[in-house]
Length: 237
Image (cartoon, rainbow, N blue to C red):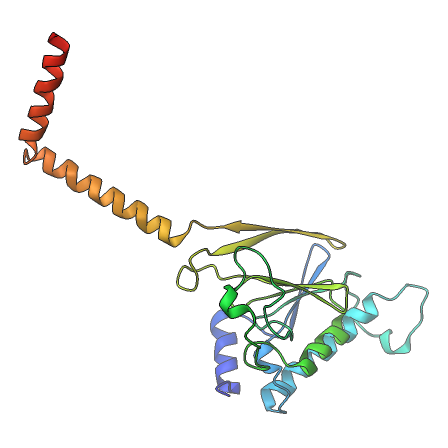
């Protein structure tokens, strides 16, 4: 537990970022979740973060009610676009492992069946259920595992674990581009070149450069001259 109130405040100040925050753009609601604060151990940071999320959940639920539906609890609540939210978080919601994950950028076969540890690899079952119950999101975007995975929670809520974008973590990094509207979304995965292929191209280009330099300083003149004589003799015949 290395997270402290001081570190959280410093992070928010430096990066101008607040966790447990709602961002609304063009009628689309994005909820930023500090998944590290979903430990459920009652720490001050966790309590504050959960309180923010509960308040956001209340706002969103009130905004999605029909106009003719009267609820005293929602009378003084700020109205938001009536769009189901999209959760953005680092840790994935609870799943046993990556065994069901598919795709070129999913976990390697030898790692897929390794059980995930709650509160370390993924959120706990309790924290996951809280987020699903509070927000009923239409999409969840997460990361942390460095491998791609698509999971369907409660049979209807998709979660996309975004793979690593860095060659440091995998040979075939990728990223996701999306088109999102208040009622729908479309995601497309884009792959970067394989790191091994890039190194191969660099090595081939380096070898070619060395040959050209040697030829330029006439260290390879005799072989080239011999080849030129053979070509000239062939043309004469």
